[in-house]
Length: 240
Image 1 (cartoon, rainbow, N blue to C red):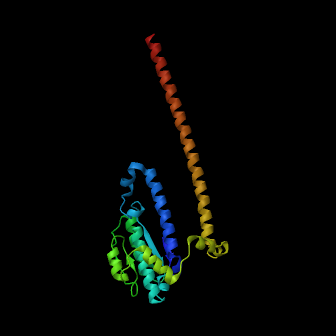
Image 2: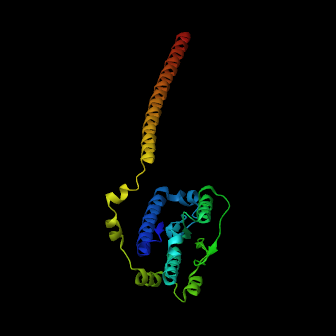
C-alpha cells in the first residue's frame, strides 16, 4: 500500500482500504490453492494477510519533514501503528532519497527472488528516513516512542485531530478524468498498445501451432491404426 505524506488526511483511509483488498484477494488465492497453499506460498509474510509479504510505503517523506513537529510525530506514530495492525514493513520513500528506494528494492528482491533478507529498524523520523521491517516493531516500543499511545485506533484518532480525515469515498470522488489525463504518457500508451498487439499475434500463432500439432497427431494415430489393421489382416491370412 502506498500513501502520500503530502496528504496526511488521506493516509488512514487509503492504507486500510487497500489492505482490505489485499486480504480479500489473498483469501481467494488460498482457497483456490487448497491443501497446497502452504507449500506453494511458504506463508512467511504478514499473518494478517494470509502469510503474504505486505509493504506500507509512505511516499514523499521530504514533504512531511518540512511539517510542524507535532504533525511529523503524529503521522509517523500512526503509520507505525498501522504497520503493526497489518503485519507490514513500513518504509518512508522519496524520489529525492535514493537510499530509501534502494532499500525498498532490496527488500522486495528478497521476497520475490529469495535474496539476502533485509532487517531494518530506524524509528528516528526527524533526522533519518523511517524504515521498519515487519516483526521488528512492537506496541511496547511504539508506546515508549509516542508517549504512551500504541493502539492504532487511539493514534488514528490523534491524527484525525491534528490533520483531519477524508473517507475513501471522498478521496475517490475527488479523482476526476481531467486529473487522470495529466498523468498520461503517449510513449507509454503507444508501447503498451504495441505489446498488446504482439500478444494477440503470439496467441494466434500458438493456437495455430496447437491446431497443426493436433492434426499431425491425429494423422499419426490414424496411420498407426491402419498399420495395426493391416498387420492383423496379414496374420489372419497366414493362419488360414
